[in-house]
Length: 297
Figure 1 (tube, rainbow, N blue to C red):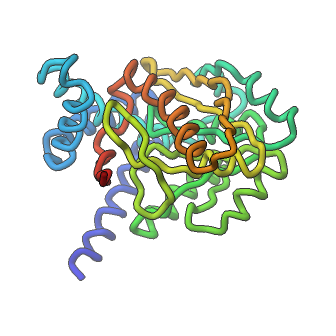
Figure 2 (cartoon, rainbow, N blue to C red):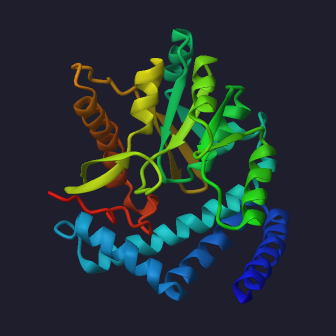
């Protein structure tokens, strides 16, 4: 029972803080949130240690312990900035979005729409990934994004209310796959964030930073079933602005061996994500236990 009351207390405390953040200019709110993110780095040792451990495994031969610790601190700062920007979603509109987010490669999405088979926007927990759905909706592209329910319903409702401010529709990943297929068959965008080790979704092992990583196959399975384009996208934080990069669609291999092809194609998009994380390691969520599922030989 004490945990139940604590959740409510933290929720209303968070809502009060969010109200104050919303009153501030976005850049000021972002700077303050980065400071609190840095504080979290010091007061949440469990997550700090996960980040440092993951970074050490990924970059231990390339970076010193001091460099790795600095990157881990930046990860927490980025998450703080993400939260402040999410709270300020309602301030973004057609008139000001181009001053905040610069898009590169929108012709890729236009080309995919011309094919008429739907577009899977493959995202990752990189930069401020929540801006992906917002940007497409503000720009007038129809679609939905796949998300997961947050453990406490009030947080979940609040997050989705912020998304709805920009007409971002969420399909929970435990809902019927028919909803996802319907989006693609209607030639719309389906956003998927699939770069984590999740017990509840079908996954395969692929190489990620030199280690076997249990990786969801959903993006590839949906692309194979519908003929939709599988398009990796990244929102890179650059100072007070963001660069929204839309990569060319993944060329899917089809040898006739379904199981092998799923692994090969999942490896292909995972390689693209890894290439961006290597360039901007401070912008990926290293606090997740990405390699928690072990491969049994």
